[in-house]
Image (cartoon, rainbow, N blue to C red; front, top):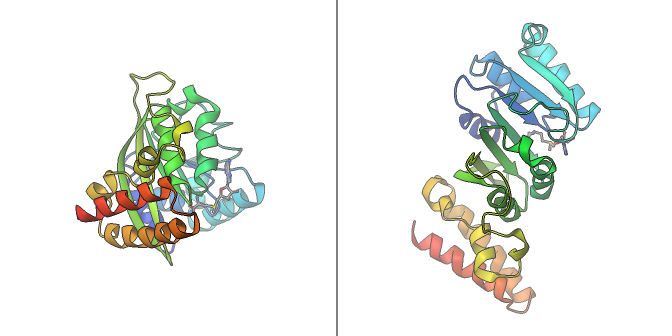
Length: 240
Ligand SMILES: C[S@@+](CC[C@H](N)C(=O)[O-])C[C@H]1O[C@@H](n2cnc3c(N)ncnc32)[C@H](O)[C@@H]1O
């Protein structure tokens, strides 16, 4: 099969060798196919809410690794989020290429099931700040933030692990403060981990975000939340 894109490769790197995983919203199925063909995962469950999208994964798997499908190393489930997935039925869960709010709704649908998986690799298309707060509120610790280029975009890849000591509930980071408390919002949108684990693209990422926030600052009549975001980006950039 053809090489994975840099974005999918970056996500794949976060799945430990030997770990099984569920790819929610798989569409083309390339992540699962690549991990199985290369022998890096013992099995993968590929899901999608859309029958048509899941059909692409089934077709591609049939082309690139029909034996793996026959042997049950690649399984396909048509469902929304974790709906038809058994608790703890794989080591990791990947949710990539979806909006941040959609990812939040998948993770918050069944909190106990969500906590039954050891590791999440999340790549939101937008609203990463809201997703980070939802993770904190659910007792899922963010361990790493990586940045990867895809065409004209720089994407965030968030690796997070449920804290098994916290059963549920708010850990003090209430998501309702997002957009209300300026410093709180700025830290959710631009976390410190970006300058620690973000990688080579961090400076460019912060520069682009600064331009965007400065534009918004003028348009929004110099509001406090955008002002705090600008200060936060400058602070992080100063640490590089
Ligand atoms: C843009 S594609 C991303 C494909 C792949 N994950 C990637 O990152 O390249 C988004 C896929 O997510 C699926 N999807 C959207 N909401 C979903 C949900 N709640 N549960 C499962 N799949 C969903 C869509 O049908 C679509 O196939």
